[in-house]
Length: 286
Image (cartoon, rainbow, N blue to C red; front, top):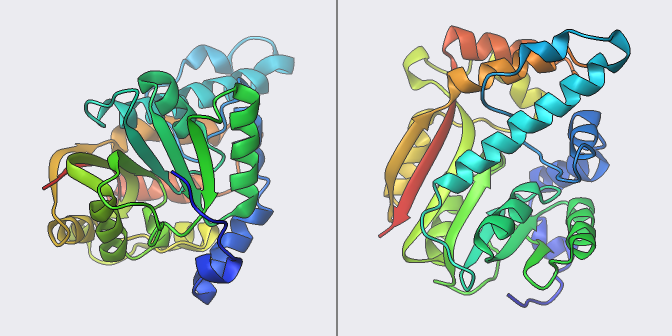
């Protein structure tokens, strides 16, 4: 997809969007950088699956390196689960990574399907980093990252076979987001998100969920909002997978690592008390 280079004023339309962009432009969190350095695949999301308890044993001097490698394995496993739900994607298809971070899931999609991938982010630093990665990997002819607003990408209607948000929906209005995804997807195209959402059954945001919001400058949505916004925008869920129990081991391991940030306890509390869910939702464009 070709597009002209937009100005910052065109992309960042509200003070909140500017604050989110500033946060991610300044972000150099070791929990993202050091894990990516394991194999050059940089993610901006959490992990799923049981961790190997042996990483906590053995020589003390290599303990942290073992934990870092295992956390990276779990976050890569999470991205693979998202890609498993994208449906049939071929080498000639186009897909979009919305809120693409440093590009990890985009490169995995291209490697698996051979498809064209466009990533969008409101962080120019992330876009530049990810495009440099595409050059290094020799896939810049197929994988490109753009400084764009996920609510108004400017790309052609019906041009995508699939699209996704991997832990980025909590920064935007869901009705606006799904309207744009529905516009971009071809009829029968697939949208997938993995996201944290608060549990409507337990009421409003718990104290732990509010702490997560504050830490990441985000606005976590209730679970019900996803389905209302999808229904309003011709996106029909085909799979809903509760990954909450599968992500708890990642957080328990992270809490014992050198890259812990202090947000581990609120996540574990929220998940275990049931006020916060980690969901995968796959939906078809109808």
